[in-house]
Image (cartoon, rainbow, N blue to C red; front, side, top):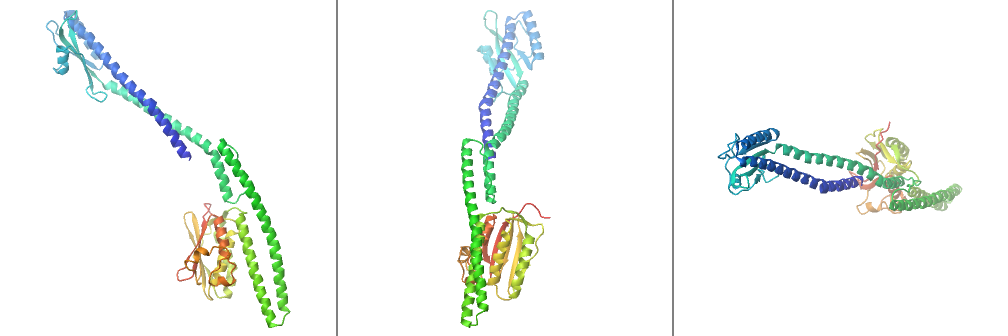
Amino acid sequence: MNRQLIRSYILLVAVAILLFTVPVAFTLTKQLRDDTKQSVQREAATMALLLGNSDPTSCDALVEVAKAYASATPGTVQVTATDSCTPKLPRPDADAALTRATENDKVTADWGSDFIWGKHLVVTVPAHQPGDGPVVGAVRIVYSTSGMTSRLWGIWGFRAGLAVLVLAAAAAIGAIAARRITAPLRELNGMASKFSDGDLTARSPVTGPPETQTLARTLNQGAERLDTLVASQRIFVADASHQLRTPLTALRLSLDNIADGVDDEFVREDVEQATAEVVRMSRLVNGLLVLARAEAKVTAAEPLSLRDIVDERLTMWRPAADERGVTVALGGSIDGRLLVLASPGHLDQVLDNVLSNALEVSPDGGRITLRVESRADAVVLSVLDEGPGMSDAEKPRAFDRFWRGQGLTGRSGSGLGLAVVKQLVTDDGGTVTLADAPGGGLQVVISLRASQKSGG
């Protein structure tokens, strides 16, 4: 927006310069041309009077005036000879202008070019006998226009340089004005950026023109309301965590105690089924709480070491994988300086959910591979398993809450794992997609923002 304002300001000033400076330059050029023509014609008319007198004194004076004029100006004087006065001056070539002067008594001025002027201005003036007598000859001045051309360049060059200086000043003033005009908008953008990073305490100063002040007040009021709603949600999440987890834990302990004291095989089977349902309900509650926290966006993204998080989660999941003979490995290596922008704890939960799903669908003796690819402004994590995979119709629905596919996850999953993954990754400004793994299975592709700050 700053550039558009500056360009508009410069264009406006350029149009003003074009409308005022260029006509003035043309006017000065015309004035220079007219003044020069009148001056040369006046001098030629004076010499024509001396030539028309035809007496020796006038003829000598004509020669002296012509020599003085030639030394003081870039013009040379030519005269036609008369019977009584033959000055020692060059004669003009016979041409149409000389004919019009001597036969038709016409003063002529030839600039030598239709565009401004040529190399010489040629002025021819008829000479009359005293007392308005007949034409007895003509005086011609050939005036070099080189000095006029230099003055012409001076006129246009000065105004061109002045225009450049004015445009430069206009650009500087426009930049200052644009920054002042857009300063309130930058404040609003900064507030929006902080909001997108999870800082709900961000507020915008109420400055600038009335329109931006009204907008800032409206956004600040909305931010206050949103902050209140999020605070209420946080309280709900904390209360729900306490109120739901505690009874479920107590119920599971009670069922375990009952199972230990029951010898009846049918009763034991019923207790085990009830325990499995409690476990599933606990997982469902945990998933809902994680999802609620993610939607609350209580933390802002910050640079985190990807290698530390990946090593920690792989170490945590390897014992569970070893029990089924499943290999959990890192495909390649991760640069220890590689940082990603994520909220603390988000990436841990994302990897836990993805690895849990991958382990659940992996066959005994299978392999789970985590790969990392660093790009210009993003880091891509891919988790590949050797399970049954998903059809093209199932992949778009896999991120829906409570949706469970027809594979192994359909029997014991809560249907919230990938929904939580998508929420957490999206909150951190990333994306997550599903694709077929080479050789069969599912590939979860997680793209996160790369931090410009390098790790130590």
